[in-house]
Image (cartoon, rainbow, N blue to C red; front, side):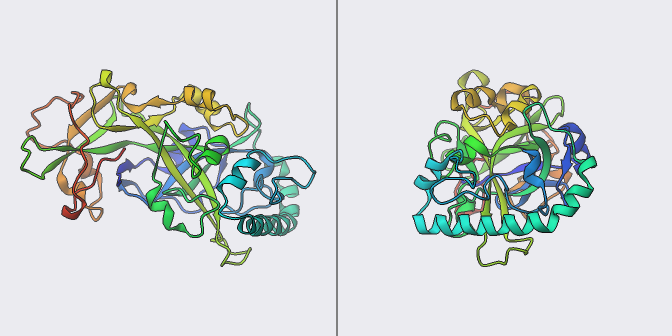
Length: 345
């Protein structure tokens, strides 16, 4: 499956919109009106205050560091999700090697950054209600599980189904511990032509009626490239996926799948790294179509990732359907050989 969405808000806008306390963006992203899988995107996460101590902007998740292969931390307690780690690892040996790399990296980065952390302790942002610090980061769209042998799997994990996200090996640990918000201005969907003999598909742009941001419910993971030295800023890869659900009949079946969003009042609960109840987490997610979306046809130029710019989200001239009208049967799969993208969600 392939997907596209638009993310054009500036970094400073997102810092203010999401109440970010710690900016981890080293190089701001340009407005992107044709975000495709494997592209860099902004993500909002909440991490415990100690997680960022002594790390670089792309550094490791220190909450994972110091965990042994059997899930035991340095203090002898069991790490959260230890059973999932064993189930998701391809082998005990590979997991042990990964944990060892994380431990070594944590020790070195903590030592190197101890004085810097002490010197700036007065500037450390106050923890949120749930005991974490909200950060803005850049991640790659397409989740790479921590146990993956390489990053190629990421292009196939751009979406996580809400129905199975808590149980699928690729997502269950991230769902329990690494949730994020992925800001978007809107997303694209393709509708089949009414002529069964035609392969033509009309792209539609879907956004909030009030122009507000869509905070997609997402998951993130950190993947360690063991071929790179510990001090290489690219040794840790941050990736993410978007949680989706089936379109609901009562909202018009705009498309087969739709993204889940998190309403502002629930952002803190969704991002809380200590929240682990699958039932409670599912209750925080809302289908995007329930947040008063408007839908209109746009140019087929969006079919190619070579095209970008605000013109892609402009309504087509001669639109015969009023913006916001439900579209029956939208979201059919496309023929990749013809270059048309398939349904986003």
